[in-house]
Length: 113
Image: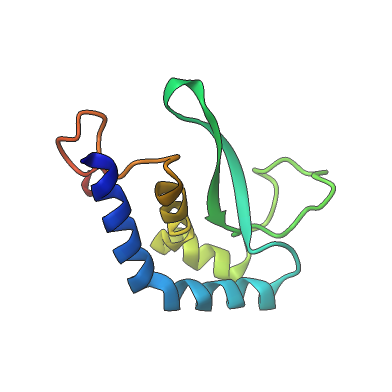
């Protein structure tokens, strides 16, 4: 039942936020070269690894020569972080089954905390 609710809520939120996400993707691509999404390795339930998606908010460093805390934030990235729009692609992770929108016991939606 929880998985069904995750899929329904994620689909509805993706449908509502799709125009915004397209605009953000175009803004990121036009502001600086590099990928639109960034992937972060995470460990889920039962020790299963997955790649969490986010919009890229930092200037691309292809050689990874600088630590993350030294890299500069793009102008659109500052806005994305302030409004937390950079986390919208995580809805794709919810559809894949990597993440859930509810607590483990299914009692309350975790996005309301």
